[in-house]
Image 1 (cartoon, rainbow, N blue to C red):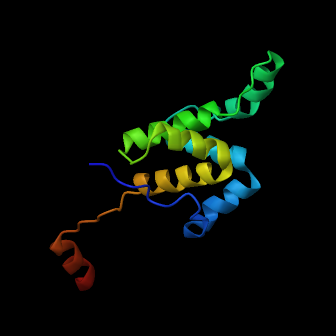
Image 2 (cartoon, rainbow, N blue to C red):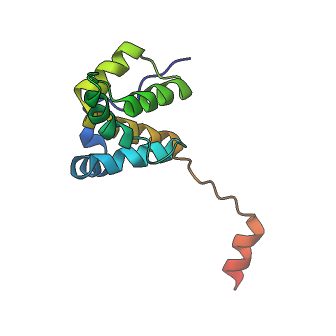
Length: 129
């Protein structure tokens, strides 16, 4: 069963911490997303270096390879609706919004509520002290 993204691409007000983090230091946010997804934290730095290296050889590069790979990987792992074409468009048109959405998604998916079970005798023992 496919699901939708937890938040829309432009839903920055849903998580102001992620948006501020991305606004003030998008490369740092990208590295954090990569680490949260279990990849090398330096992987997004390829997006910064790749265009310069490729243009030196006369090859235009407009799609950020690491951002696109992580977006597709997250979408596939969590069975989120979408397509490769949408991922390419999102990664090219709004890089900052894409990284913020990925960060919000991973925070949502990795959040596991803690359940504390205490025996009834424990509560009685505390009350009787």
